[in-house]
Length: 154
Image (cartoon, rainbow, N blue to C red; front, side, top):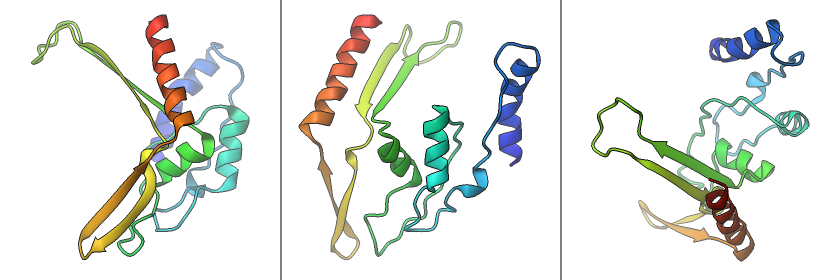
């Protein structure tokens, strides 16, 4: 709860000085799964995110169940339930900061719900897990289309 209070402070301050509409927060931090295997994201959390169109999310823990290798993390559940399908990472060199590579400006765009996130795994023999990375044409196409549109606009 301490993290939530500190994270909300900048938003609350903006609202106090009149830089945004009145703010009301749905604090659902106690509603999230505790990381136990086979727990899913509560419906009230999904409804709040859909209703508000925004969420402030921190790190979510998912315990792995060695007997059930198809356990999905809470993050993957959220992505799939809310169709948060694109992951965009923009890496840029910071002026004045010496790094191995200068003038870096790279954008990586990838699909966020299929492939590695399919969750289709099984133990072939003891301590050897086989993972199927299933992708579909439709989701691959929309990711490629998003990447091309992003490139045209940026």
